[in-house]
Image (cartoon, rainbow, N blue to C red; front, side, top):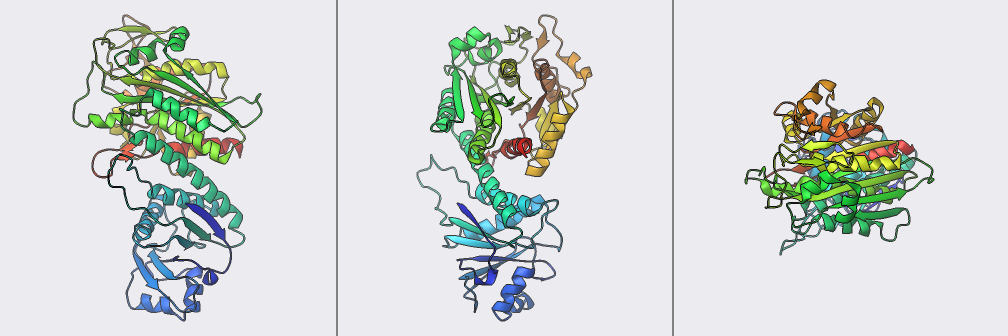
Amino acid sequence: MDFLVNSSSVDTLKTSLLVVTVNEQLQLDSQGQLIDTACAGALSAHLKSGDIQGKLGQSLLLHNLPSLAAQRVLLVGTGKDEPLSDRNARKLVSALLSIFKNIAIKDATLAFTDLTLKERDAYGSARLISECLIDGLYVFDQFKSEKAPVVQLAEITFSCSAEQQPAVEKGSKEGQAIAQGMAFARDLGNMPPNICHPRYLAKQAQHLAKGNKKLDVEVLEEKELKELGAGALLAVAQGSDQPPRMIIMNYQGAKKSAQPYVLVGKGITFDSGGISLKPGAGMDEMKYDMGGAASVLGTMKTLLELDLPINVIGVLTCAENMPSGGATRPGDIVTTMSGQTVEILNTDAEGRLVLCDALTYVKRFKPQAVVNVATLTGACIVALGSNTSGLMGNNPELVSSLLSAGKQASDVAWELPLFDDYQEQLDSPFADIANIGGPKAGTITAGCFLSRFTKDYPWAHLDIAGTAWISGGKDKGATGRPVPLLSQYLLDRVQ
């Protein structure tokens, strides 16, 4: 979909569909009043007749109004006369998309000059709306014999004032790039695990870099991982016929001397739980356990689209966690790349094992900061539900930056404590550390485990177990989160 910005008078715009807002007080904004005047009060007449009440998302489609260049006018309700929250803005866009999908139009114009979103200026509003429009049209039907109907809408125009135009253009451009990164992450997450395995993710990273001089990709296979001493990553993979991979994506958008920011993604392409086997019900959703890796790949795609002047390294630790005669057993002790030994008490706590070796590996890049992303603990879903990602870290400034980025991107996180008191739960009588800390504070003790490997740089951990996908029902599927949060964090580093 293409986005255009036009500051011409809205009543003169040639468009298949012109969208105008009305609130619950049946008041048109300045753009609506201009259109109403141009068509001799036709909009006011419909409002007086009670054809629409202005409730959020309610709509009324009008055809062939006199003296307008637009073929159709869509009145859409914004609810009470106040700035919309991000949640209500998404509901408004969802209502628009339901109309767009059911009428044969190739273009539409949004007369949203006066539409205000809470704590968002023209740039922020245009960015969120652009992102929601593209994300709302996402379809994953690669494996269906009958494809979803193709939406003909190919062009959206934002009608705005001349003063707003630069901000709206910037916002729509960035919203598009973020939505494209989300779609990439969603595609990877929704892919079946018999196709999306560690080697597939490596090929996707290589394809992303193809033809782009700023992105280099290196793929470490079993031999190299053994030489590096990545005992924890290799232990997770040893029960599967699928070989593990560590994928390093190096984006050079700034001077080579500039220290990079590092994103590390957990890429468990299927998690059976290993010998500590998960319950059968819902196990199909364990293909989403590579959501961290998918979000890092999606963020790298956004980075390439925006061509940001920054150095970023993405590291994906990819494996399949399966039970077999060769699988890791509860009670096994492995040696990590850092030299620390881990007693594996539960083979289903494998995400922290593949991440810890990557967190040791990235020290060589002398990073400004490291953010790891993982569908790590079911306890995070218990604590925060499916709307908010969990966040921990060893650097208050980094944690604060990520919280701020999440709020700006409407992809929120919440900080959980990482107090030393929790570290004792990981004590092992036989190794340096156990891989689980018991039933209490499971998300926090997982963060404590990772913190043992991140003492040489500013580090933060995002637990996206509740936010990376929607579970069960007809809406089941990957969400593309936290691509918006990560993208905003990187944008903030260059603005």
